[in-house]
Amino acid sequence: MGKANTVVANGCDGVTLFGTTGEGYGFSLPERHAILTALAEALPDRTKIHAGVLNHSIDDAVKLAQAAFEDGLFSWFGTAFEKLDHP
Image 1 (tube, helix red, strand yellow):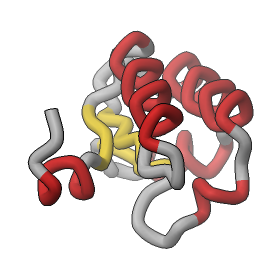
Image 2 (cartoon, one colour; image 1 turned 180 degrees about the vertical axis):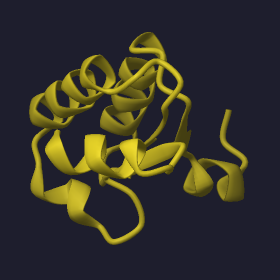
Image 3 (tube, one colour; image 1 turned 180 degrees about the horizontal axis):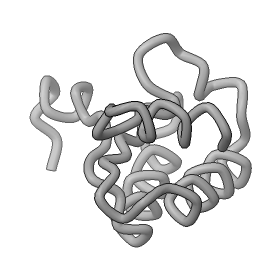
């Protein structure tokens, strides 16, 4: 979590994990949840953490979004769901 702490200490108000470049697909569901939880615990409470939850499986994307919400993360990428207008 060193780089995330460094950018926050130098003025960034948030970080994004598993976001826009597809890197999240390289991690299993449990790995992604563990990393997000560890980051939420390591950074100051004021830090906005954006969690990418897109996945090949809708069920897994929902699980990731629920885990992010339960961890109190600021937001998650839901563009695919918004564009498809799924509840």
